[in-house]
Length: 121
Ligand SMILES: [Zn+2]
Image (tube, rainbow, N blue to C red):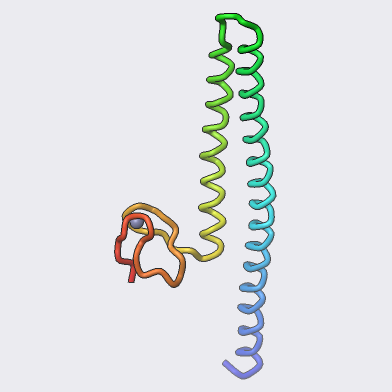
């Protein structure tokens, strides 16, 4: 392989890494926006549940809207799982490691898992 070929190879692998980095930055931006949306939505759902309970209190009735409250709580639970999945993905892009025992994200400088104490290094 002559010098020009080597140089061309270097440039092309550099471009590949750069475009991979760009893809990651775009994905991180999208994930962050999506996370903010989910968090805002969860807050709205919680407020709605609060309104339902307060209206029930004011109405002096014995028919608490249990089915509707359970439905909303289930929705929040689903969104929390989605939020967790996105945060994990974000941390993976950032290059965080995960504890092999409990799955807790581990920052670079840590020697032990902050959750279960498993030795990392
Ligand atoms: Zn752990």
